[in-house]
Image 1 (tube, rainbow, N blue to C red):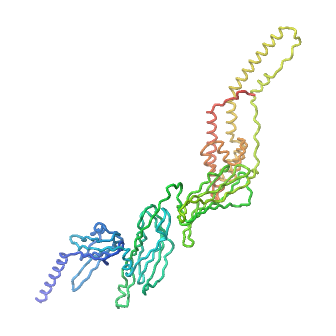
Image 2: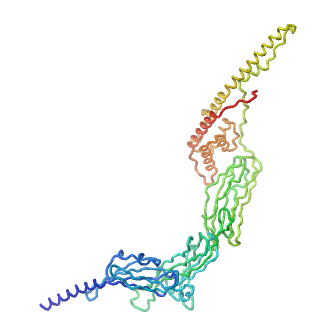
Image 3: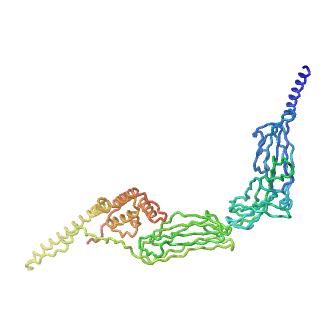
Length: 570
């Protein structure tokens, strides 16, 4: 019994002292999976401490400032051997080697009070180490479409990842170029190749690269991090761990990005080929004044993004109202090339009858194959416009002011000749009568001149505010139903009756009032009417409000403007 108690006490003390010894002998061990390393090649740094610690006790970014950290993960392990419990924590850090060949140093890794050993790495020049790279389980080859491109010119990089065993999992990081847009093009392709009698699994991925600044630049190749399946024939326990971590990096490439020409003006569009086309809806249909001509313009370019396509200008179309719709963009691939297209529909409404020409729409672009500026243009369109079939109300003859009639009658009266011309006194009386009549004429003319502005304003105000007319009531009725076509016709008829305007199109009414809110409402009404997408018009109330405000605004302006009578009234 005594021996049993003694053995138990000794065992307990041994466990306690063993735990104390482990706690006192905590150490950190750092190791890398390869050395030497090719420049920019990824590698794995493993940091292990014989203790159970949290992830927050070690800041990898703080202690590894000279390296690019791809990712960090941790693992914990607990084992009991002969009654002794051992706990370890490992930090696995995937790093990318510096791009400059030479000797670099990983400083001692400190976790708590413990420090690891320092590690010296030899960084090899990738250009002279291609053979060594391709002896590894994974390596990458790249090919560039061109090493000499223009700024914002799109070019392709093809990356081929070679694996000497089947891929289990992995991630391919895209190439990197300073101030450039890099996107994947198409889908990955998988194949197999035999190199020097060895079979490789090959994964091909294509990238589109668009540099945004010029100069001599270094294109860093793609980086692969993953796992391959190990050979399972060597051990009966291989099913427990059948994968092997691998990494690879492509050799960096130097490229030259040329700037745009110094004398270039306007939108910069570098491309292999650009075209502009136009298509007219219902090309055989005759066109009258006021009827829309629907045109669709398409700008197509090879080797550019849709965002690079320029906006189109339609300002040089004369004697017409132009209503462009929002453009639509599309992108597709053909024969391994990216094709971008901008389509825009435009409604053109001619205002005059006769020969009508829609000029060509031009786009200036830079031919990257020839290294020179070129112009792509659509075909001009020439049409014969017929007069509008809608009857126009003729302008009524202006009535002469009634106040002038007495004056005109007085000024043209001829007195009866005297019965007897022999008497001298008769001429004296006639002279007095003519003088009095002449003075009366002047007085009446002055009275009419003073009354004329007031009468004119009264007539105009009555005309413009005559909201009780049938045509005005019809305008309000159809506008409140948001019927765009009926509102257009009603407005034209009302303007003809009220203001004697020809009204070939609604913009005559807008120009007559020169009131911006009304002009905006008319433009919106016309856009909705002639939109190929069938946009709804829901601004009937707003149009009526704008029209009333325009009438009021015009009345105030006319009251402020002095009305001058003619110098020689009839």
